[in-house]
Length: 422
Image (cartoon, rainbow, N blue to C red; front, side, top):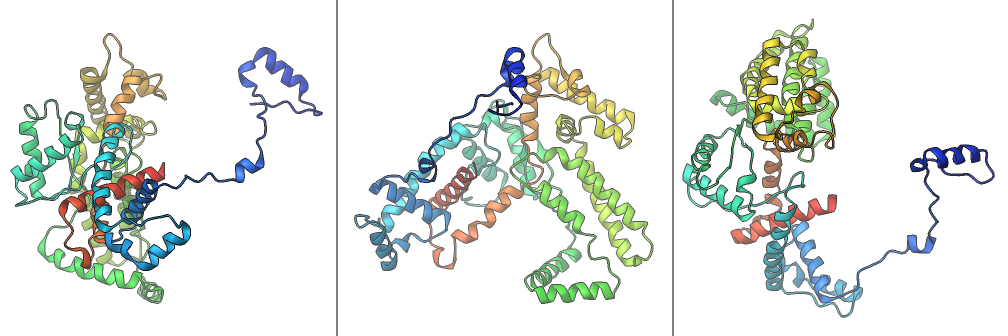
């Protein structure tokens, strides 16, 4: 964009653009008054608005409902606005349940565009059996009217999740119409044997104690240096864990590149000179564990997601010297899926996409395909994060909260935090 500068030497260029390229010229915007800019518009006080923001404060800061009984808080309300009337704890509880129902209706409408959101936090009564898990899962989907919109489920490696997936596959033809569920293995939980399981909790406690103390961290670093132990090698795992555990951008397409990158790093480490053989052996054990879970990336979801990423596509496979038969197989998989579900009649732009950059206006059907597949999370970290926040709500003095109240508070806190990040 070019602005005409009075008294300068851009007049001829400005005239040329006006005559030949008028769309490139932008007129100067009239400056507004500074008083309007610095003056902040505050909402007018009403008892309804006051109660609404009190509810938000209670929920988002994990405060007990009885906090409004505090004489000091009521005095603060009175100082801020003499006519403000603090609601009772029962009124707050009723407002929270009503607000939950209102917000849930809004969430139903915006689910198509939201990157990550908690849709339910329900109590599971009885055993974690196939039937019980299936019933609760389907009910949560029905509440949001999304059973036919689900494409994939990301879970941890618990065996009852396997039975849940099987139950969903059985009912997908009947109760859930066109629901298609594909099980995505979570590669985070890699340790199963009893011997290692006894050591891990002790190591975690030790790491926490070291981490919270700067003095211990410094001492630990000196000990590693004195013992000639490489103390930065695990940073690669931290980097990848943080990246793939995010909930506000696509992660599934990076699963294969991350596995390959980690395995390359471990190979390089194994070739280093001067590293204790015990440490190298542990690195080899890590490699074997990675290979065990790497085989799950042969699934079509991972392949298609990688190809749909504009930075990767099939170029990634060629740049990393994949065998041609695997590249051909990957290309055939995405072609068959595209032609079967996404391609319009008498039109195919997949070949053009695979050889050039793409955008939504050029390839709307491929864009729809990308929205479906790249929305699949690579790990179950987002929901684990939500569970971890439950301890902030259910403290030792709030163990008598009803399951419906916990559900409403957890969902509202997630929804309002998402609203604030927009």
